[in-house]
Length: 112
Image (tube, rainbow, N blue to C red; front, side, top):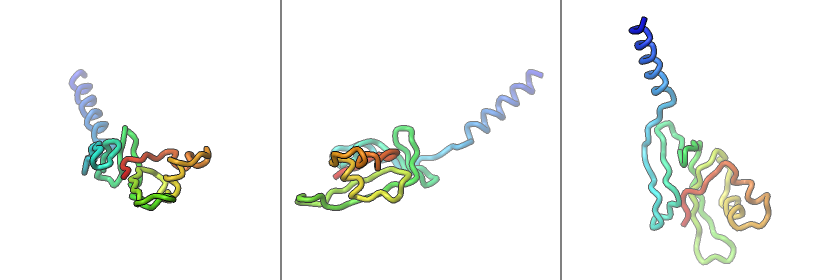
C-alpha cells in the first residue's frame, strides 16, 4: 500500500511540474544604459513575462512628442495589441484619468 502511494505521489509531482512549464528564450536585464527599466523575459511559447505576470504582446512604439527635439521609443508588454505611441505618451504625460486607464494591464519595460 505504501509503495503504491509513493508511486502515485511521484506521478502527480511529475505531472504537476510538467504542466504549464515554460522555458525562457531570452532575458532582457534591467539596464539604465540600454533604457531597460525592468528585467523581463521572452518565453518559448511566444509570450512575455515581467514581475510574475505573463503578457501576450511586446510592442515597440516610437514617435515624437510635441515640441521634442528627437523621437521617443517605448517597449511595452501588454495584452492590448492596439496600443499606440500616442496612447502611451498620454498615459505618461496627460493630466486626465482616462489617459492613464489605457495602460491598465500593460507595463513599459524600455524607454529611450
